[in-house]
Length: 281
Ligand SMILES: Nc1ncnc2c1ncn2[C@@H]1O[C@H](COP(=O)(O)OP(=O)(O)OP(=O)(O)O)[C@@H](O)[C@H]1O
Ligand SMILES: [Mg+2]
Image 1 (tube, rainbow, N blue to C red):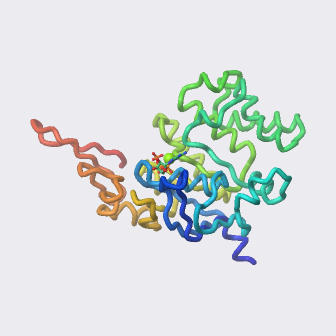
Image 2 (cartoon, helix red, strand yellow):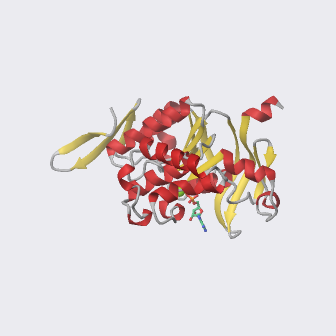
Image 3 (cartoon, helix red, strand yellow):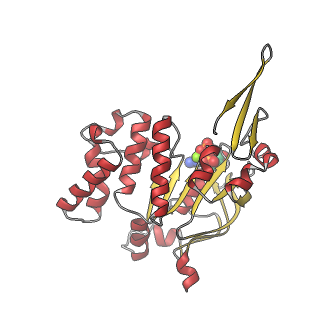
């Protein structure tokens, strides 16, 4: 029983294919425990977003079993129109930030967008307003408060999406490429935010292409191969030092070199030899 409590997500031989033919996940077996921070890396189309969609109960394994909080997540449980306690529990515990912000934003102002989730949970209006104000301040988006979300820049939209999830104070955060399209200062701010949330005991699962942030936001990295299988499930450092695997999984290219935690890119210029671009130091 104890063990069950600590295991938040348990996937056993999970496969998923879209429309019964486009393979996205193959034979995925992983457990994710409460309070863990995990990054998922892999090339385009390897299955990262699909894995997060399974974890968020948006799609159901075509083969294998998925348990969340010790409870099976199946279409029967999740898609039934009938009110159902487990689904409500799941939805209050798990927050999802989509890779594409436009899917997530639909209100007429940023303020309403952030207030929507808590209002759905029947929280009193005054409390909702106070929570939204707190989140707006924390996310440093006060100047966007009355803007229409669809008119925001990509990075601004991303921040609002993160705010709409954090305002519900979920225990588990599923983030699909949260740092993509953010400027360096905003990226750093996001990393710090994720570290604070980690210290607060949140379980955070982040799909990313950004090898540099892996060890800053996680202690465990799952590498998805182009065959949609897990290639390695280990510490970020051990993943980063496995150059062959990174090459084979299309995560680095031949001009990129990783020395310890340092990622170098050799941009070959045939006249001037090559330059080192320090992606991280
Ligand atoms: N809605 C969909 N319908 C059909 N096929 C899909 C759908 N979504 C994803 N796929 C396919 O499933 C596979 C896995 O896609 P997924 O989006 O999970 O990859 P990803 O690792 O998140 O890629 P990226 O790095 O580009 O975000 C790909 O072959 C993709 O074309
Ligand atoms: Mg994706």
